[in-house]
Amino acid sequence: MKRIALLGMPNTGKSTLFNRLTGGAARVGNWPGITVELLTGKILLGGDMAEIIDLPGIYDIHGFSEDEQVVRHFLHDNVPDLAVVVLNATQIERQLSLLLQLKQLNLNMVVLLNMADEAKKLGITIDGDKMGQLLGMPIHLISAKYGQGQPEAMSAIVKAL
Image (tube, rainbow, N blue to C red):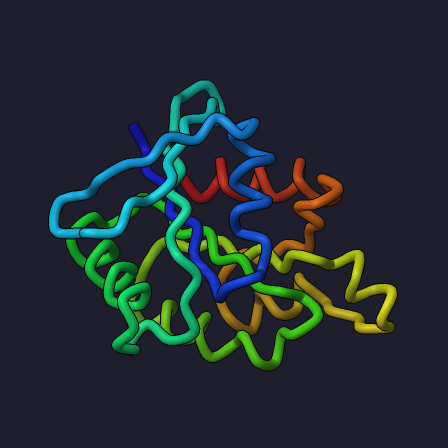
C-alpha cells in the first residue's frame, strides 16, 4: 500500500484536506519511534488503496519543537511514497522556506496551494504552472474547504505515485 504524508505549516488546511479526502474516516496511529499520535486514513487512488498520514504542522524541518522533531523523525524512519505539501496561498512568501527545506530532502512531492479562493478575493494571483516549472515539482491551487481544484490535485497525486 502506498503511503502519502500531508506536510505543511500550522493552519494551512492540512486537516481540512485530510478530512475531505478520507471522508473524516480517520484513525489514530502510533508509529515506531514517535511518541505523538498521528491521524491516518485510507483512500482509493487510481484503483489502489493508499494510506494518508496527517502530520503535525511545522514551521521549520530543522526546528527543535516536539512537532518538528516528530515530522523529521517520521520522514527519516518512514519515508513516504509521496509528500503532499499544503501551503496557504494567502501567505505564500512566508511559507516557501519550509517548501524549500522539504525539497532538499529529495522527497517525491506534490504541492497544493490551499485557500486559493481566499487569495483570489485578496487580489493575489499565483501562476501555479510557472511556479511548478521554476521549482521542479507539480503545484496546484485548491480550496480544501470547498473542494475547488480537488480533481486536478487528485490526478497529480495519482500521477506522482
